[in-house]
Image (cartoon, rainbow, N blue to C red):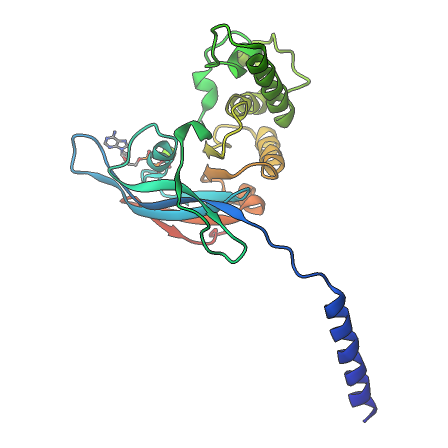
Length: 259
Ligand SMILES: Nc1ncnc2c1ncn2[C@@H]1O[C@H](COP(=O)(O)OP(=O)(O)OP(=O)(O)O)[C@@H](O)[C@H]1O
Ligand SMILES: [Mg+2]
């Protein structure tokens, strides 16, 4: 008897507590979505990607893993607009708080995708850090507003990746492995991409630089939607919101990390 009174009191208290809680806050969100993406290497019958489907909500971290030669780099090159898919679509879809789409999907502009290739330091072209970060910027005389925006973006990108302690005069090739990766990232971040892709960001680095890059990605994850291709599953596991295995023949399946 005493216990049922206690239980009743507990239940009334719990109900009063629940009523006093505000409704769970939900809001609109966007998803980066890939639908039925297929790719045949030009001039061949070889199918490198086979109806790939996946989606990644904004500000989340996706990881694609899988056997060497399965098509991971081929996929991210399509997402970045470096090659054109044979069929399928890549778009951004906005959803309302009821989980239903609130407008037609928008094709993803490749200008809104940043990609850091495997071993990006091999492609450094400039003689100093400043020229490397701003490589590809318009050189013609722009208006003052445009120059101010570019300067602000540069400052923000340098702070984001933790390069502010490095002299902008330094030869990019003289930096440590971890700092070279930061520089390659800063180059992509000045454009504030909607989607940041990294192909094997830890490959070829020593343990210290690897830990450094993982820490940096953890920090960037708060601001950006990130898609990584990697064989280094254990080191990245703590960051991952969604993961997929690419199987030989370019077949992608959502799957938890096998660690
Ligand atoms: N232009 C091309 N023409 C023909 N075959 C190609 C072309 N580009 C890539 N391939 C082939 O496509 C397959 C997928 O290559 P891809 O580089 O995407 O694999 P990956 O999953 O990134 O491998 P890794 O883990 O080794 O980086 C491989 O068999 C590769 O040889
Ligand atoms: Mg690859």
